[in-house]
Length: 220
Image (cartoon, rainbow, N blue to C red; front, side, top):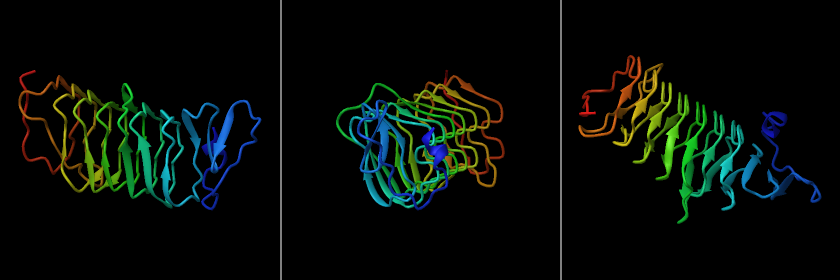
């Protein structure tokens, strides 16, 4: 994987791929698969603002991991996959999901935003799965979870610091172990109102979370 090859190269601003490469292509120093449907590498030295091509539907594992100079990232709503550790320990002021065309379903992979500092993040309406440790130890002013999410994985928000209280969507059916558990910090969250679709809360889902004041248990 390309991110592993150039990991920690904080001054790297561009990787240029030969035009006759059968598998890869580069646009303005950013590496994609040949059909430009998946971003494979983003240089850590790039700064200010970046618009991901609208053709991209997948962010590969580790692509933005450790990126700290980028201020704003624009992502098309056609995205359907955010890979494992895609933004792990990144520091990006703003990540914006935009556009009129939405993908079928968006899955946020394991540890995708673990330890990241991401400002305000509003997940697009087609997000359905937030995988294990996706936002563990993340720092954000606000994370808006969309109606349509059905699964929150193990430790999905464990130890996350979110200034504005998160509301768990009424569409969520399962919550994994230690999902909103505390570590140094307690995730700021409230359960859906009575009448939601919640079916299962796993062991220790809210372990030592000191910010929860009210729990509403739906009829399901």
